[in-house]
Image (cartoon, rainbow, N blue to C red; front, side, top):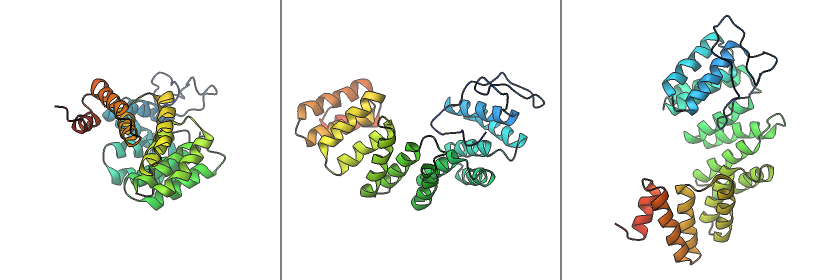
Length: 255
């Protein structure tokens, strides 16, 4: 199997724990082609998503021990090391994943995201481009959105917008791209567009402290203080411990 690991997705159901000598069967692998290392990768990814990082680390390290040439195992282990703040080891395993399988396009996307977070914007964009440019990658809106996000957070908002719009052309309901376009619109003072992107986001993903706070700022800019106050109150009720709730209370001088 190639390039099936994506940071934002969990893998399908797996078989019960198998010993290294057994060839495991998984319900998402009807031909029984998963190796034991692949099963440990799937387990590790699931544990990582659940926040059980110590157990995930054991499984993913074991996957690499079982099959040092498994690109997906290195990709998953790199993501986990990034979560643990072990950036040097993360970088090493991302590079190994791509060396072992230059067609692991999920790893290109994941490595690009890592490079962006560590301040290497141009290198990140190059990795994203590999992922979204190939017809072999089934979700090009993910690296396109990541590229836009990377550019916006680097202060290059004008360059970010085309990537985000391309992502939404390919998947109009992709929440991260909708949220980023709301940020872009707010930063460029296109407040009606900000409102529209927030509405589209909320329709598919619901409210978060971030979207409600963006709404507060947008409605104030549009002159609707009552709606801004309503949204601020919602933050206080639904997300009272969030940083946005603190900002909302300060804005409206609440104790």
